[in-house]
Image 1 (tube, one colour):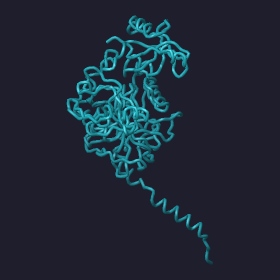
Image 2 (cartoon, rainbow, N blue to C red):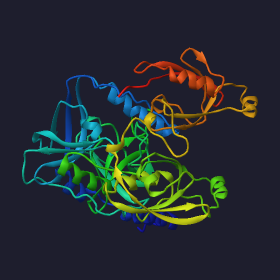
Image 3 (cartoon, helix red, strand yellow):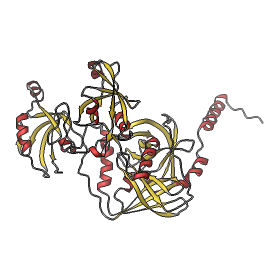
Image 4 (tube, helix red, strand yellow):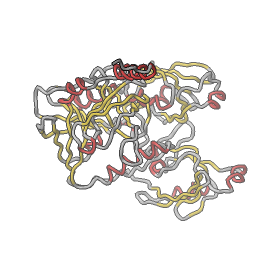
Length: 462
């Protein structure tokens, strides 16, 4: 008896088989990689101290919520233990994980898939890149290689191994959703161009490896965005190219030295591009230059648009900090700018970032500087007073890591009250500012997008 198979069913079956044949098989790769992946158990003997720097700057809601999740986890860390992931990067016992996994830990133990356990010490930890280098007393370990190139492409298959919710050595797979994502740290710094994937990453995966199909580590899983605490297909990994430089410095000195330029920057939109006679809305627009900074010494001025730094193209303003940060302090490099519709090349000697982290309230700029709160304010003017039905002064600049930034103030906020006194104009503001005490929180009331907000602001003494 012959069975007749409809042609349409046969075609569908062949199509399904063809798709299945083209999907990657991770089994051999996982078997090869797993021995080098570790579970990181961290013991905390006391509650970690909360940061005194709340989030400032203008962040998209998605990134603000992501940062707040991290901050809550760090501030509310109870006595006890937490779990993260990591992986061996050399056979003599060096292990890479996240800074936030081990930060504040009193005891760190790593566990391998074969249940061997070792006590680990922290060789160095870097907050800005969220990477930490550990060392255990062991030899001849299976290890993984960090990819040395930035050849990762959107749509490429990747997989992760880690310990989500403490479930050891779980494997998840997905694709690269985007590259070069800029997610500010709690101090509004952007030194990592994150890889975004839809790989299912959950708490406990932090510090674990992200692989390509060649078995190379292309990223270190660092953050997730989630309203529920579980994966919703938005995870972020630190590129291997960033980790290579950080690991080399941590191994050599226990710290990471980054380049510092000394500019405040913003994106160039279409309107700004037209007003600046630019052919395209690209580059980093310099809005302020710090006094005595490498940028000022090189001749950079507010209004310049940086479109290339050290031969690296700058498309968005967020592209600049990672490029500057990876320059060795003391190196002299080129800065290509647009000024008055013309291209110019300047030479700048990059300084060390950490040597220049002075309180922003003491830093000036070539366009007017900042006050004790790290702010620059202006009178509203009659037209704006009519439009907003308001009084006070409007913020035109907020210096990074300043009291104003720590209080969450943003450019465009209208300050209505400082302490117990109402502010009508910049003269009122200046008189009140000169009398503000140090190390004492005072109330500040301001208007943002038509809504009045109360917060506290504090000037810290050195």
